[in-house]
Length: 300
Image (cartoon, rainbow, N blue to C red; front, side, top):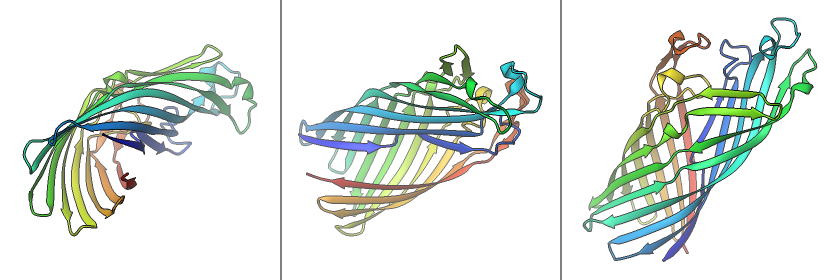
């Protein structure tokens, strides 16, 4: 029997657009941060089979900013004056995870895991701002909720070549749980955005070369399918099918382990057109990202 505690970020997003860009009524700034506090127990059932189970405690913080034309508020403000709108909120949810690892042969291991959906109720505030108009009376408390998706992963690892480990894996995420985003204000106003996301798949290939007892070199490739359909694609979450190229190192100072990795994430080009119900922010979206990760582990 062994016990562990992981703290990591399963989902995250940050996009920022100019306050005066043409899609400002859709989004100017969107930030989502999640922390998963994950205590887990594992048990070695046989020399070849181990199982594990844990609890996912999700802490979520969200900030959504956009511009609002005053005409939509029914306010007697001069035309052309945009208000700034910001929703800030946080919430907590609880889920679970289970996993299994099985040594098919001495050189081949199969692993699989499942993480449940997590319902997060988010409480926050909506505030309005203007450089020239008194709008603080419009501020209100607000709330929303989001269901983070269930996840299934499975992989094979092969260690039959001296110092080299090869791995191939698959991931499925149940994003169909994210059908809409509804923010309900204390004053009775409801802002609802249709999402209708779809379940998505991902695949990965990786290799680890153990140079010596202390240093290992790693490399990999990930392909991920976008969960965002064409019908609801917008600049707040400009997601697309993605390719990630990764390199890293794993340093073993037993009982301490330190791992560092870098990834370049290239999103496939994506087009938004006015056939999606609104001409705002139409155009071609090109996105890439640089990813850096550092992890530290201690074995008791």
